Image (tube, rainbow, N blue to C red; front, side, top):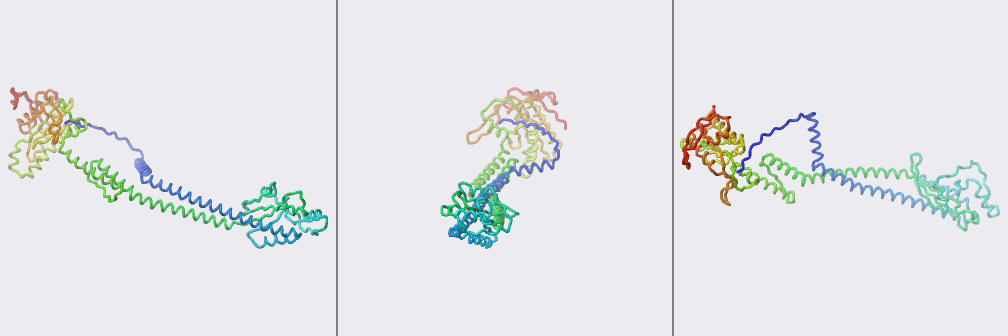
Length: 498
């Protein structure tokens, strides 16, 4: 039995500035650090990243497919017009080619088709081409037309130069004008050998077909589709996060929170809680394990009422017997046998328990350790340099308690015996049943002094009186004949003022 002295702790109070605000911020910080918040945040981020990547990939694929399809259509139109113009012009039917281009432009309000010379001037807007062809053929193959309109502006765009460059390229691009969007394609007319008879062989490109398609309505529809998809994406992410979060809360977070709450109650000394969880997964196994642990702790906690603090401390500090200096304090109820014969058992036990409880409180208050209860007798031990002083204070308070409040204990009073000296402390008993207790001469002397003390009297050994110092008043010395001692022992009676 190692005696554990009560430590008097002082808690310093620090003024709290803006208490409610600090408490609110602290609670908010706990929410942000909680597992529930972390899981919900991870779910939302994971779903947003996953579904967002799918949506982004789908959107990019949609836009890419739109551009490819529009490009293919425009270039295909350019090829058809190219072949048509070639078929008109090879036999020398250039006016039909001009009429054909104009009719195509009028047939579709969303698309415009224009034909330009390689210098960017609209084809057939003047007689330049007619004059050159007639010159190359050395005959008046085509008749010049009167020009009634001013010379049109040249088509000068960076992309146009790509179509007429070396090598000439088919150009496809997007442009925005006046709040509308257009896809545009330049299809160069190559000056093939069979064309050079009329147009000459000093250039590669004879002209450029310009096809412009108004895709404003299509893009608006696609933007609405993308916006609807984004809204649907947010709704889907929100619903998935809600349902997955609810599922995780029900399956994982709520049980973990319940387990944490139960552990917190156990830490504060309450062992009445229990986790009701029927799931057969790992969380359920953990809950059942915690329930078993709490049940075991409850049993051990109840057992500590019947075991001294010294015994509990010995389980961690070592159980090897050692010789130590201690002050022993014994108390015993006087006239208890006669009292039990004249009162009902329930009343006897109730009065005795009240008296033993109050004695225990006083002994613990002065840093003593109750070794055991033997019927109506209390065996306690005090350790430390001031052990005798604290033991005398405890004895004085116990005697005063019985004298001042006799009716609280049905008139019962106690006698007290104390002795100080060297004793042996350690585990005493067998492998099946043992107790961490004390044995020695001082233990026997304290027990003998208690047995001869009258009700309301505290008898101390000479060693205890000397160790207690001058803080107490004693009567004596007296000579006491004790069992097991050949010579009378010098003892003192502690004076207690009631």
